Length: 261
Ligand code: IPE
Ligand code: IPE
Ligand code: MG
Picture (tube, rainbow, N blue to C red):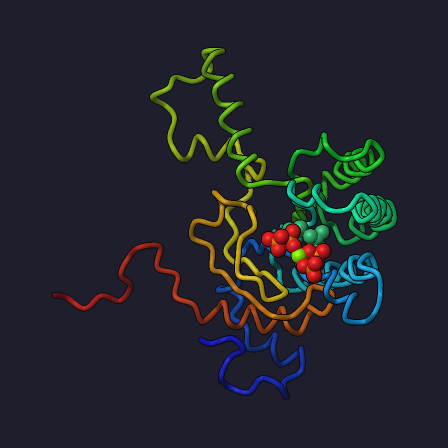
């Protein structure tokens, strides 16, 4: 189905859109490249950090929508390893925002029974950010309604390199024999283990690239690109994307409904 869908959904309320979703066809794991915060701010004559700040409200809405629909895993790309190449002022503001988000949002995550975890080279984050990441992970560890994963200082290639490094150490320690190495074993060394691969990836802001996100895990993920800037991506558009996702035929290389030759 083209995006936006060809039938007219404009008049439908959020409630009606939810009613159109088929619960058994919902993605179990949604991943998001939250892009366009800077442009959102620049369009309004604001500083880029105001765009990042507003983007937090979109994250909140997405978490609550996932909870409402019973989507069990949400993984968001918040800061890439390449983002360290941005101006120091923006990096510092982003780290400050991360700490503020974690320190103020913890209570709400616990109340909603959302488990928080961070993936990436977290040792590169400032000490205070690492502290809030660890604290939030620890305090939400028993929350079991949904897993909310935030990729920080994350690189898909670095994740694969780190997995190989750990695997080699286990081979050297004689815990694993080289002939045991296969896809399912390597998967266990990824940061995302034991999460299932994302069923749906959404990237906002009109860019049509992966930008080094979850390179292994996205092998068979349905991709959805929308021109909407992340701070404007809210519940209603998420529902429209889910409706689009439900129209996709996930074939995984097979032929579905094949007529005999
Ligand atoms: C995404 O928004 C957030 C991060 C990468 C931290 P951007 O900051 O990339 O916003 P644009 O793409 O410049 O508009
Ligand atoms: C990707 O956005 C990273 C995050 C959303 C955290 P970027 O804005 O950094 O990606 P590029 O530079 O456009 O590929
Ligand atoms: Mg960007």
